Structure formats: C-alpha cells, structure tokens
Image (tube, rainbow, N blue to C red; front, side):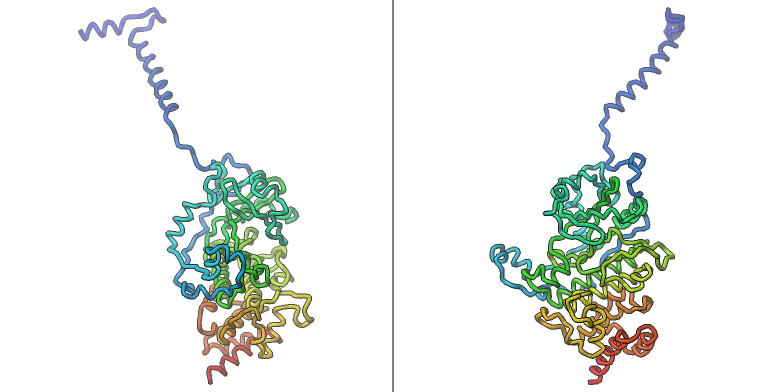
Length: 472
C-alpha cells in the first residue's frame, strides 16, 4: 500500500507536468499562510491609548522626563489640626449662609482634615479632571488641547469668563467637554518665547505634583497661540481675602493667614529643593496664591517659571514679575535664582501681617513701599502698630516677632543672607525663634556687613527685644 501511495504521488499531472506531491506542497504553502493572515485580521486588538511619538507634530513637547521626581508630603509636619480649624476665619452673617447650610458649615469650620495620601491618589485617579477626553490627545502627564477645544470651553474667550489678568496674559474660566471646570491662561503673543523652550519647560512643570501647587492639566500650541490649562480653584486668592474682594465671606484670622503662608512656603521648598531641575517661579505674589475650600494654599501661575539644571547657581533672563514683589537684584540685572522667589515670599508674608499692598501710591511718601516702611517701623520698635487692624484676635508678641524676623530675613538685600525655603518652613512651624540664641551675636555681625540702615536696625530691634523678654 505504501508503495502504491508513493507511486500515486510520483505520477505526473497535466499542470506543467508537475508531480502530484509537488502540487500538494505548493498548495499547502499557499493555503496555510492565507489562513493565518485571515485569523490575524479577524482577531480583536487593544487600541493604543497614547499617540506614537513619531506621529506627533513638531510642536509636541518631549517625552516624560525621568529627572522629575515626586516626593511624599509630610502631613505630620502640619502646624494646624482639625480642632484649630475654626480659628481660620472670622465670619459675617449673610443671606448665602442662611440659605445654604452646607456652605455655612464650610466657612464656619474651614474643615481641612488631612486624608491619607494614598487614598487621595486613588481618588484623584478615579475622578481625574481629564477623564473622558479623547485618548489620542493624552500626554504623558496631561492633555494636549487644540485651540478649538479651548474656544469651546471658554465660549470663545468671552469677557464674561475672565477671572484674572496679569503681565503674562489673561485667565479665563472654562468647562471642558467632560464637564471639568478649568482655568485657561492665554499668554500674550509678545512674550518672544521660543517654541522649543516653551515645550521643554511646560513638559517639566507638567510632572510636578504637590498638595500646595495648582495642577497644570495641559497646554495648547497653535501658530502664535500659547495657552496653559490649570485645575480650577474657586475660593478666591490671598489678595482677595486680604484686600476686600472676599470680605463678604469674612476676615482671615492670624492662624488662617499663617496656614496659607506655610503651605505656600512648602510648595516653594518643593520646587526649589525636591525636584531636578529646580523650578524658580519668578512671580510669587498674593494674587497667585489661590485658596481652596479647605483654606489650603494653592500656588498658581508657574507655567512660565524658569528651570535651573544641575550645577547652575543662577541664570540671567528678561525681568518678568510684578512691581513691589520683584527682588532688587533681579529687577536691576535679570539675575535670577531661587533666592528671588524667597524675596517675593517675604513681601507676601509682610503683606499678610500688615494687610497693606506692597506698593501703595495713596499713602505718604515714607509709607508707599511696604518693605521700607516696615523696616522703619520695626527699627523704631513700633512693630505692634503694623498688624492688620482687620485681624480681630491679635497674634502673641512672640509669634509676631518670629514672623517678622522670618520676613525680614527673606527680604534681605543680600541674596546670600536670605534663607532657603525649607529653612523658612522650619521658621514658620517653630514655636522658638528661628535664630538660635547662642548664634545670635554671630548672625548680627553677619547682618552688619550685609545690611545697611533701617534693614539692620530692624533685625537688631527684634533680637534685642527678645533678649530683654528672656531676661524678664
């Protein structure tokens, strides 16, 4: 039988006189690959959730930077706890509070119970502000918006949606197609910022995560248009709470102001010291410190901050900031590093203590500039007179002097004598004076060489008063 089968396979056919076994081999060689191709085409495949980098336009920013590190926030270091939360705000009765019991309780208690960070991360993942947006527009850290997307979100950038204006551009309130409220910053076209530089810096900042930083959700680059999309924080900003726009809700207490400033200091310490490359905000001011419903600080508008790579002590750049907050060395020469932010923070700290604007042309000549006026008042040992009269319960003398000394060190005209922001955090959290008693005289000698006039007298006045208090 085997010989018969071999004989049949060896017979020649009429097709090119090929033997039977040759035809069978050719047939199987064609049929099997064809079946495999059909099976592969019919099998469902998972779509990629991200766009291949090779298909992105040239305006797309680079891939995720491995240098950006996210650190855990130490909640145990918070100075205030739940039982102190009712000290953050002095309230006024109003119709809105009477109509809405939930809102009344929110402002009355200012409840800001700290939640477990892991739980927060899970909730953020489940309720992501970008959930439901087109997958093909996802970045490694956020979303790449088209100009049309943001026109729809802001009703074609209508005036009714403007929530802020500044030297960098105009901020609009918007609503994405998934219902998420956002703040859209439309940058001025005359910034002259190179496209590559814009992309690299926004890419780096997009990965930054901290509880006291407003999250950058995405951006848009089309033609000359440059837009940044942030999470929306709807409880006003520090400027509004200090200078009256939010006065119908109440007045911030001393504890409330210090909680907001401590959160701001922690955010800046994170930007300066916890990530690489470090980020210099370069526009720290009270209007850029947003406040959430739990009265936590949310530093915003750092989308055009400058990056300082490893080994760089400073950069020389065009001066951009707000008059009254800008460090003197930056204003005069464009010399920028993290100590420029420290100076601006010191001005904000003085603003929170006094309730005054950094520059007020309506006041007498010697009182126009907040920093100069305060140094003069403290040097004359009149520091008790500088506290904002709107603060119903005044701070203790020791708390006031500790905060003033911290602020004065921040606005030291010598950049090398200014503390780092992590040192500022420790000063604000400490119940002790920020300068150890045994090192005080040495520090005074340093200040003698670094400060002049009222600046030196102001620091010495605070120290000398504290020495006298300790004796009694």
